[in-house]
Structure formats: structure tokens, C-alpha cells
Figure 1 (tube, rainbow, N blue to C red):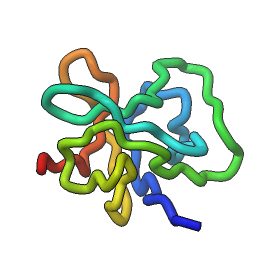
Figure 2: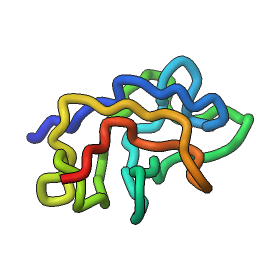
Figure 3: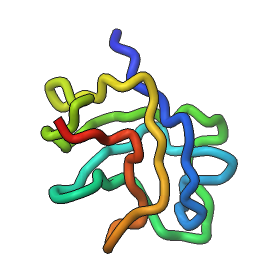
Length: 97
């Protein structure tokens, strides 16, 4: 079984999955131009997700990222932070190939 990279940090206060760390089971890195968006970002005050912090990268749609290997993230871990433009959250580990 392949081990997926963990979401090692999330500093996005307005996400329903972020309360003392990302509580989503897995995130999707998405977007098409510029920075890579966290496609799992949900702008809610209500907090949800799993009780235990286990967040990992489930899929990466950014084929232009140097860590993207057959749509899977090969980074050792990813950091999620405040988004730019219309994005609420970005993958800060994203590096264009």
C-alpha cells in the first residue's frame, strides 16, 4: 500500500476542516492557473471531519507540479495556507515543474 503525504500544516482559519490541524481524511489539490488550490476547502464556521487528525493528499490535479507523479503527490508532506485570488486555500508545497 502506498503511503500518501500528510497535510503537515494548515493555517487557513476559515475552513470547516481546520481546527487544530486538518481533520479531512484526504484533500484534493486542484486549480488551473498560478498557485495550486486546496479543492477540499469548505468556508464554514461549523467544524467537521474526523476526530483524529489524519489528513493526507488523496489526489493532485496539478499535472504541472514537480511533486505530481501520475496524479499522486510525491512530496513528503504538504502545507496548506491562505489562498490567492478567488481561492480560499492553497497548497504551499506546490512547485511548478
